[in-house]
Length: 108
Image (cartoon, rainbow, N blue to C red; front, side, top):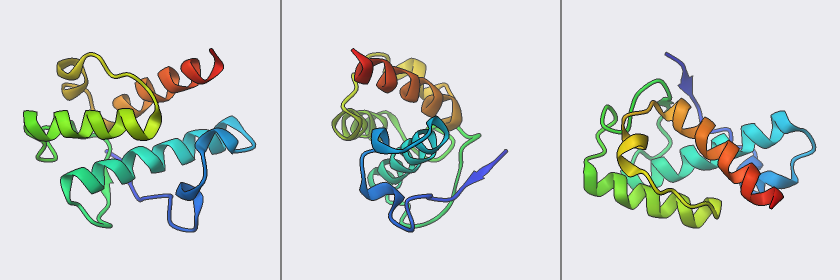
């Protein structure tokens, strides 16, 4: 299991992830943004989050998960329809799904 520190430290989270020069940089900024939203909604402060865990594993009950989904939809400008399917995934898998969805919606 990987621990993911917030890559937004140093200003990366301040700009739009789509403005990053390479796909790798886009992914890093996107990940930092998602983890910043998770920290904000769940009250984690600056603590590292193990992205191998599910939302339930890190303490998100169904109400917090719904609040997280709404916050992610606003910040990422992406629609998240299947809350139950996302709750069962690790944060790393969730970030993968959201990144591909957001890239697809940005290209449309």
